[in-house]
Image (cartoon, rainbow, N blue to C red; front, side, top):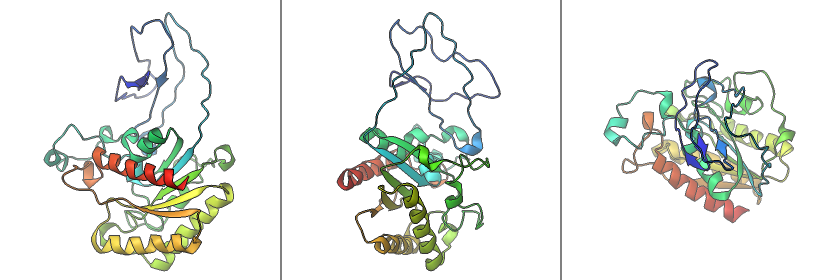
Length: 280
């Protein structure tokens, strides 16, 4: 939770319907309170029932007008899985078991890029999901299916007319290539092209960035790079672009289960923001 742009509470661990004190003793003035859900869809949904304000009132905010809208489509990297470990040593992080308290969407390259560019953003990301193959090896309930839903756990469809981005950043492929698996090139490239073509039906003027990294390495990276560049080459226009993030390093630390650290996400955001500025 942020108050006037400052983090006041970095974890609100709420179960069931309870009333909690968010902030006390604010000076009498206009204040802005911002809530960010750190965790993914499978860690629960958050519902705000009411605000109780003592010695004050809620002022209806003006809806900000953004010059740029960015949509991010990805997996655990984009969702912020295990990223909030900067207070721990790298050695300690490598011994950690997963816990939702280490997730933090507000530390991802997605959020940081949007902040740097003063952009409105949507993050559509699920841990373990891939383009044609998930981390668990399953080829059902894939990421292209998830973008149609409000969340993966609902049957309600998202209305694409409600929010149209200027640029779509896709970072998929890490789970397709997980556990040294090499997916079929034809299936992977075809699925990627179909995803972009489908989104182009809704977002006719949008630009697309097909990104790679920072967790894939070795032979898998070489092949993934080839596959994604084939997608970009297929469109061969000024609407679809390629971007590769450098592989994360021990020096920059790790998140849980060798996911990118906060520092790695910061570097990714800097690179992506520069790319978007050049494109737009």
